[in-house]
Structures are given as C-alpha cells and as structure tokens.
Length: 320
Image (cartoon, rainbow, N blue to C red):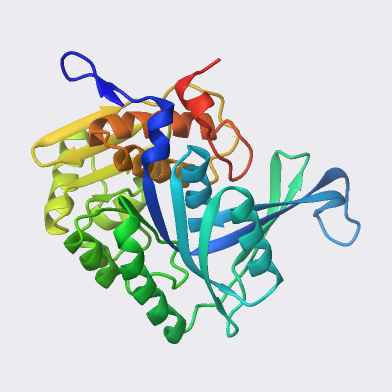
C-alpha cells in the first residue's frame, strides 16, 4: 500500500492480506434448488420445477465474512447457529473459504436457512425461510468472546439481519470503540439508536428512507443524512443507492460515487460485498473515501453474478 503524489491512493492486492476483520451477526445458510420449468401444474397456476441439483452458500453475516476472506483478509466470524445439520454444513463451508468460524451452537434453535427454488440458474421462483431466535444465554457468552477477540482485530463489522444475533450490539460497539477499533454496521429495521457511536453505518436507499424520510433532491438528501449521522454520533454514513451508486456523508463532507455500468444479474448479497470490501480496505490502512470507491467497484462486479457471491482481488484490481 502506498500513496502517490497528491492525494491519490494506490492499494496493492497484497496489502489486503494485512487486514484482520472480525464479523459478528446473523449467519445463515443459503440453499438453492435448481431445475428447469417446462410446464404449469394442473393442480394450481404455478410452474413445475424439474429438480436438477442443489447448491449451498454461506449467507447473511457469513456471506460478509466469505467476501472479506475472498479478498485475502484474515477473517473471524462470531455468530450463533443451531446444533443441527445446516449449522454443521455452514461451518464446513466457512472453513473451506478460509474463514475462521467461532460459532456458538444453540440446541434451542434451528440454523437460519434461506431456501430458494430457481429455474435455469437465473429466475428465482420461491424462497422459504427457516429461523428461530437464539437464546439469551448463548448470546451472553458470545459477548464475552467478542471482547476477547478484539485484541487481534483491526476492523469490526456488525452485520444485522434482524434475526436476534446482535441483541448486545450496543455493548459491542462500546467495547470496540474503547479498544480503538473501527466499527462498521450494516443496519436493519427502523430503530438506529442501537447503532449509536459506530464509525460507519451503511443503509441502502430503502432502509435510509424508512428511517430519515423521503427527499426531493440531493440537497435535502444531504441534510437528512447529516442530521442522522450527527444524531447517531457516527463518523460517517454511507447510503448505497443501487443504480445511482453510493453517497458518503462525513462531517462537512459529501462524496458521491456513480455506479460502474454493468449488466445486472442478481443484487442478492450486494450489501454484504460492499461492507466486506470497506472493512478490508480500512483494515489495511485505506482512507474511507478510497475504501468507498473500491467497494463501489466490488458491488458492480458482484451484481453481475448469480446469488450470494464473492469478488476476488483479480476481478477488483483488473489483474491479468
């Protein structure tokens, strides 16, 4: 990693291996039943899928972790899963993708599974979710382990999917900030007060609008974003805006990065790719503005891929 003359930033792919990233949140298993549709059911007006094969991928916070690991970072995932087959399968997938899993197995819950039925690898026909909230006892022990892991961490990513795994997020942010660690939050829901004190919060356009209200122009968007950022005592707020790119708001500053034109295949997991890339870049010393530009590039690559997917350094840096 080095700086050229002026303020331009040059980040070499090898520098990404220096980042130590701790991901905490709601891990889940993404399952895809893939087949072909050749006719409509005579029993109801629904397509009949002739099953061909199944694919499995780490989802939720686990997808954030695998995205960070795919970039070369040293990644630990702290989460809660069930003491069941999907939980064991998720752990095996993470290890295969060079993520160090610190999974608490709760016999009182089922591992969150998102089952998608897909026609021809492109068209999602149905999604079925299996989930239960983790117990208070398991979450309390996770908080203790979180504090222990901070010593060997550069950046903390809190991936909130609203499944109960971040019940103690207020304490986690406080512990991480007192330890001098950057805290990135991918938010969920309409109560952002629990994210107070985070370094960076990354809502998408719809999530931001639910919390801050609609806006009629860029000036009003900036006002609402800066008001929310100050209210939450956050150093920065990044609103990801789909085809419009993403906009970063810091104290007295605004940076808009336009989307890099690409064919969109599937936006599933794009937010995971964004926050993972941000965390890895910041973990190896990049400025926030440069990390945002890199994350925007990564998002553009990801949406060209089916399902939850990762972006490699070769893709990100255009290496031959």
